[in-house]
Image (cartoon, rainbow, N blue to C red; front, side, top):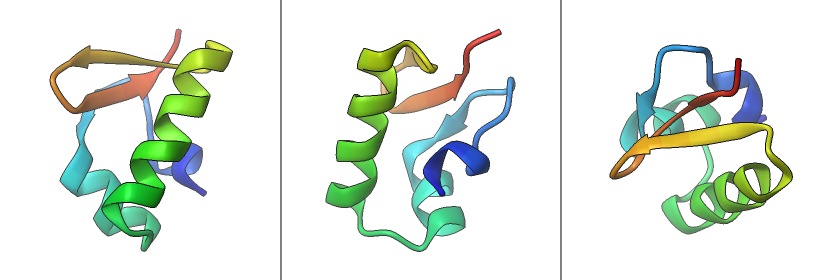
Length: 52
């Protein structure tokens, strides 16, 4: 669900939380997991996007 909220244009954590409907802590946990798997990148502080 979190991954589907992302695209190549990085989004702020607040936008991702709003889109996914998850809590901030749940969202951050999923984002960290996706980042460790190499599916997404963190471009700057709390901005995330899909990896090209």
